[in-house]
Image (cartoon, rainbow, N blue to C red; front, side, top):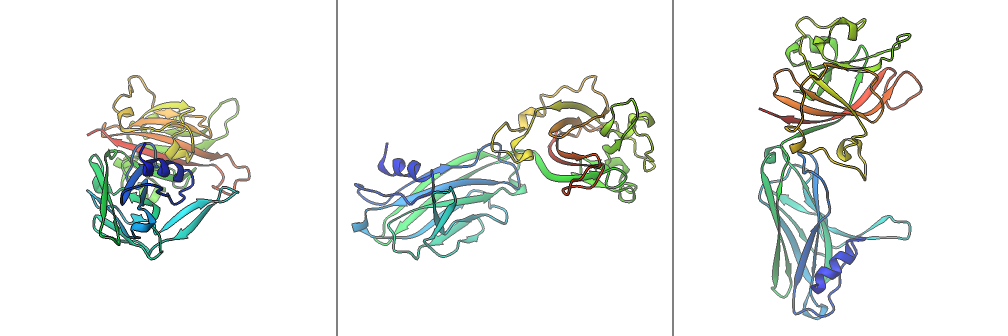
Length: 326
């Protein structure tokens, strides 16, 4: 294993600055830190390490060029990190704050150092959906040496994602998969063709109903007491599941990811247009009436009226991954 690569893998346990004990000149290496599907709005994360022997000079700059310009929030760290005894990240400033222009992010070193490991965060833009992106990392030393390292290409998912949508019985209860938004009755009335699900909570004697998501076409038996906006009639199909805790939607550090190939593989034959007794950490696969979208709805939390400062009574907080089929 090359000396810098070995140093980098050691360094990325805590992002400590790598050392080079016997190298002929400036070297560099890179690893990708982030896992799972690359979804628009999220970061792809890297650690870029560079080093040269102390007797050969100092680092002057580091740069990353992406094949597609990142969204706002894309940057190269101007600090290295190490971890203290409590597991906390301790930053060490090694340069001026990053300057990002177009596809390029660059840091100019101010510290008298011959080695560094910098984190790079690429915020995935909407325009990259369904495409691939690659990166060229490069470093320069005061002795005139330059090195570069290519990473990728990485496929960017076609799906969209929306987090922490609160649906409340009687208010913001009309859910649009197309818009990834929950509307109240007044707003839903002007876009009834885009209302795919209605959220409601009912405590019905001798019936296990509780929290429910139902299609407008499901009928009055599944929407007791609900007055739909005139024209809301979409027949959304639903597959109810448990135990599918997507790491992005649930904000977990373990588990699995829902990814692009999962959506076309679904079979909605014979599926109902309602799901009742929906619980915390449950989920719903849905298909819109026009077949344009399929989505996975993860139920982050439900509140049947007990004390819950996170959401109002008779509410559900959900997060969604949506895939365009057409």
